[in-house]
Length: 337
Ligand SMILES: [Mg+2]
Image (cartoon, protein in one colour):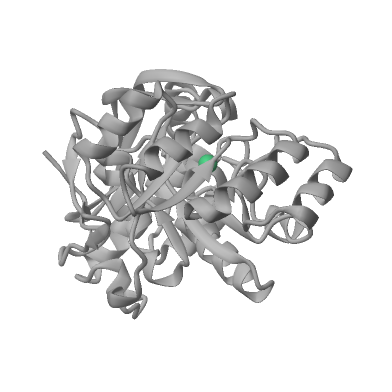
């Protein structure tokens, strides 16, 4: 197999702010993995919270170039088993390679992945559209610019209740909120009581992933809304660890190292009785099209990353008013422009 890496600077339509900080662009690496006449695409993004930059993604993937040249490709799972120990410090790079291997596998077998997995796309949930933290008036304006049945609202500052009340005055859409670890247990409990009558569906990552056990227990015990782990659920072993403190998990391909482990995590979370969500980072249509393949297996999905970009270098699975527009193309359906 032959690997080729392309680096992109993806620009956001609006500066995107969460409780940890703000940004208006992101650097991503798109992987092309070629076997014979087929090429699969995958993507990794830089992410300061997880200490990943494009230099590290490039170096780590080029470090296994020789191994890939000698690899006899049969399935993405077999390739993942071989490369995962070498990329265990860089799940983002592993994710890009695994997405590309899945796309390649679908192309070799001439079917979209969801068809190879025999999934019923009519079972896919709607995707939310994310509103970053901003002045209330700006958040209302952004919401009006993208009328949507389901919004994920980033919170984590002193105006959280004011924001939800103001947005609720403007729409009947379902809200879900994401504090990105910005709250205490007391705040989580109080906001859950205030948000429930305001049509909020769940709270994502209320407390910091390193919050004390007592805080996490307190929030879980008294929250009036379901709590979904994001920063607390990174790798496969985290799913079971989240069970005592959360009602569900937000799995991300980039955090766990690709589609291969994500599918195992979805199965495990379901076995444990947890709600299952898959989320995105700031990704182009390459990464988003890979995520979308899992949608029929999920309770919730957050795959609006490419919609937030002004220079998406690809097209593939899209969204219309929350509904996922699956591609009939083989693999993930992603194509570079
Ligand atoms: Mg989150």
